[in-house]
Image (cartoon, rainbow, N blue to C red; front, side, top):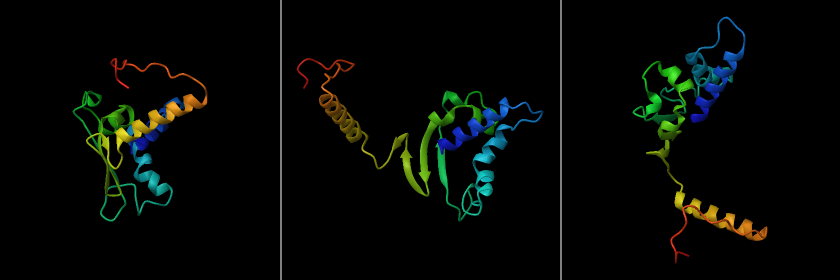
Length: 142
């Protein structure tokens, strides 16, 4: 869903660069990224808006974050406000995939450990010595 906001931001930004007397407004860019976009590709009956019977991805944003200040026009905030960093929860087709800013179904510690192991293995294969980590590990730590 944050990609939808990025698409709306990009479209509206490109529109600003055009020398037209009536540029696309934020609410129009948001509609094109959601319901109007779904209609344009023939999926308006299945997606694009929150309605009973439609597939939906829902993003819950933390509007207490400073990115939402000052409060103003919702579409303008969504398109121009860089609010994707305020995503708190995400549901994809009814499944919770992010809860309280943390992805569900993924062990982040295991991912970090695997990335560190693969990084070390790549450096060894390349014959390179790993650089010290920061912050430095305490003496005696393996």
